[in-house]
Image (cartoon, rainbow, N blue to C red):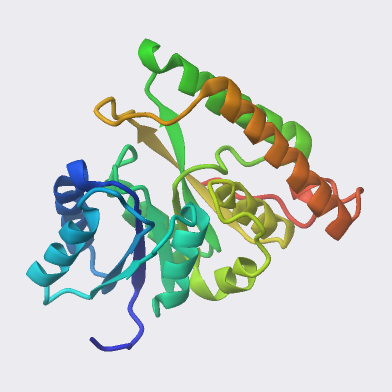
Length: 258
């Protein structure tokens, strides 16, 4: 496989994705093939316990004409560690990742990439939730997290925790070494740190459809406490780095929503 740069490097972090892997990949490739960009796909399996790895290997073998590669972690590092490994491996001009379960569909990839081409340093899918009574707990947790984040960090961003982010790779690489959390909080940290540095951020509204065929590992009370602790810890960290008067994420210039 050539190491020549391509337009887009898509990182797919995987953890026990076997039930929906094939259908999701069909949708992702169909979306990418409809664009004019050259692309590569980097699978990062983060210690799956099902047959996700076998499916990745079989998929790469069946698509040998495509630029695909894989990284297999021997232990689970968390989403931040997984996508960071993929970003460092990619040679693309624009890099990004999406959640492979496609609760936010692959159809929003072109809009995010176009936003980067139009001048954004970071482009994300701003999740617009379709309300379901049976997922009321997740809905309230998400809204509560965003409210706390804005109050504690002073951000004007709508959805830092989205698992759907694209970057100018040359602007992302300096951030990767600064990020302390390699788990799920990586998502908030990369956006807030980018914002503090004055990066232009485009948030693209995107419909979020909860998958009820997946087993949820979320515990409302426990995870709400963890979210709050992570936000407090990060606030202390950026206060120390930038000074308590940094004004939250509005220090340099405001993020742009497109």
